[in-house]
Image (cartoon, rainbow, N blue to C red; front, side, top):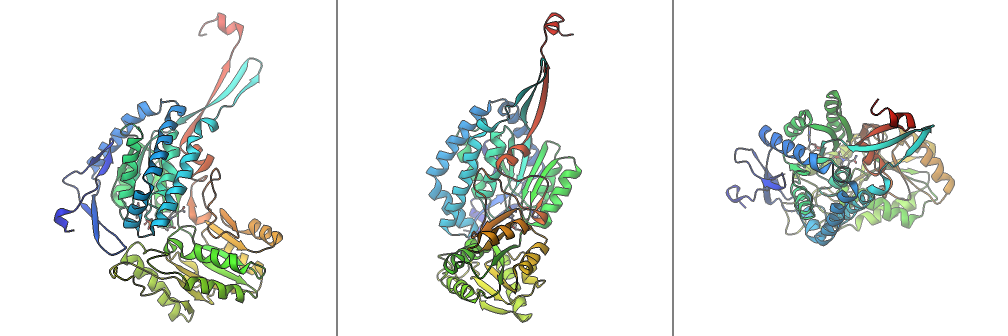
Length: 488
Ligand code: NAD
């Protein structure tokens, strides 16, 4: 494909694609083989105004549709996602580089959030209480208005699906700022929502980078912002939005620690640790990044290395997102080697036959790392596991507790007491026991702690409902006197 015949995926505004001729074009490359696969326009101020105005108009009607009717669109959307799951999985594979199976898994996880949102009529606040004689109080839940969601590259469908169904089901009009690295899946979701009967303007997609994000946050028509991405940007988005008095929830990066103790089941532990660290080429905010091996765990470590070596790049794991990411990840491995750490399994220079221009990094294990080492502290966001050795579980917990992030932490043990001891002390919002990617399943909510999240509450589950709505409290006095003194 040349730049002259690029297939441009437009913004999705007022229910239709929009490709303004004057906007800068962002090219999209597949990290699988480096091919130019498309392009998107970068939203100008005019396009942002147009999208927000269309969303504001749509909100007027959509917010008044009863929640029981709004979720009917979500039921139809679910059927369409299931019908198109192969096509969507391949699109995610193409633009993100993960395997088709991983693309499918993220759609299935997104569908779980959608299923939760279809239960909104059952969980909508219905409390009505007589608070004193003849006086009752009741809650009424209202949508916020036009809301913004800014999403990262690593889950083109699942992360948008954390917010779309709940925010829309609650009656908001929703603007998604897609990742410029994987912009096409977000637009395809819009087409399917339209097919499901969602009124035009309730879901919009805008493309672009930092400037577009900032203009959207600053837009007076945007009343709430959710963000998922790196910690540096999450913090900036949180500060910018809250300074304007907007409701903001910003999820950031992670450095997840897994602790293995000697009584862990070698087979289960090895398979699970490797799946956590290397799956999706390590580009998950819940991926294992540091393994703390407590005491004599050598037989388990040997199994972990064996499992890691079984992974075929290009088959079991896909590419990383770009050549820039590959260079950054390989830089971490090289500097760890230069610092004297042993590279037990080395994924640098990985290639896939026939896809020599792809951005591949193989599974990597760095052994004997000291707490405080660069590879033990920074979010590498690639298939790289740094192994720290400690003598005691308390030392391991202290290392986990000292890391500034707090998305996930996990323990591998066959002892219930050890599992409980660790779970109570881990400094993370999501804890796994013999589970390396402890993503809570619906209706439990998703959200980390510390530098992995800025703002209050989690992004899914009931916290999602709370984030995307506001409560009105109505106090009513019914007395015979009031009936006589009409409107007094
Ligand atoms: P990123 O922070 O670079 O980008 C995220 C979004 O912000 C994109 O839409 C991008 O266009 C926009 N953006 C980039 N720089 C910006 C800036 N300076 N100002 C305003 N907007 C900006 O993240 P990424 O590289 O796309 O995604 C990977 C990161 O996301 C990792 O750190 C990963 O841990 C994190 N992540 C976190 C979670 C979670 O639940 N906590 C989930 C998925 C990904």
